[in-house]
Image (cartoon, rainbow, N blue to C red):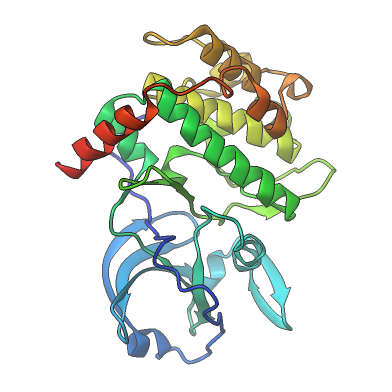
Length: 306
C-alpha cells in the first residue's frame, strides 16, 4: 500500500465536553454562525472532513459534511431521518477511546457531524510510516486497547466494519488510541451480512469469494491485518487472490507468539478464527511488557520532534 496517497480526518477525545447536548439544527446557516471552517482534512466515498473551531470558545473540531445523496444508510432517531452513522456513534459514546460526537444537524444539501479534533495525535497509518514498523510491546498495547473497544461496541449492538490504521488515532502524549469513522458501520446481527463498505484490502476471504460474512470473524480478520501492518510495516495482502489464499509471509524479526496470533486471526475459514475475547487470552497478548513504556515514549518523542 502506498503510504503517500492517503489522508484521513482527525478527532480529539480529550477535548469533548461530557454532557453537552447533541442537537439537530435545520438552519443551513447554522454552521457558519457557530463554527469557523478551515482546511480540508480528508475525503472519502461518503463525505468530506474539515478542520475548524467553535467560535464561542475556540474548541478545535472536525466537521464532517455528508452529501445527502451519498448517505449509505438512513435510520430514524426521535422521529427524524438521520444517517445511520449518527445512531451508531450515539450508541457507543460511553466507550473510552471512541470518537465523540459534539452535535449534528442538516443543511439543504448536507448532513453535518461535528466531532472532536485533537492537537497532539497522528493516525496509526502515519505513526507506522514514521517508525517503519511498531515494536511488539507497543503493538500489544494498541491491540489490547482496540480489542477492548470493539468488544464494548459489539456489546452495544454496533460493529465498525472498517478497522484499519487510518481509522485509529494515536495520542502522542499518552499512547491512547481513538477509533474514528463509523461511516461503514452497522448494527450487529447474528445472520450473514451481504454488503460491505469497508476497505477492500482489510476484507476477509468469505467476502471476496462469496460476498457474505459474519461481523465477528470479519472483525477478527481485520485485526490480523492491522497487527501484521504494525509489526511488519505494511499490510500482508494487496490482491483478491492473496486474500483468498491467506498465505502470510512475515518480514523482519517477529516473535513466534506474535506470528501465531496473526496467523490465527487470518485463518481462511472464519470458523477457525479466535473471538475477540480469545484474542485477549492469547499468550502473546498476556506477555509482560518490559520495554513498552520506554519504547513508546521514544516513539512519541521522535514524532513530536518532527
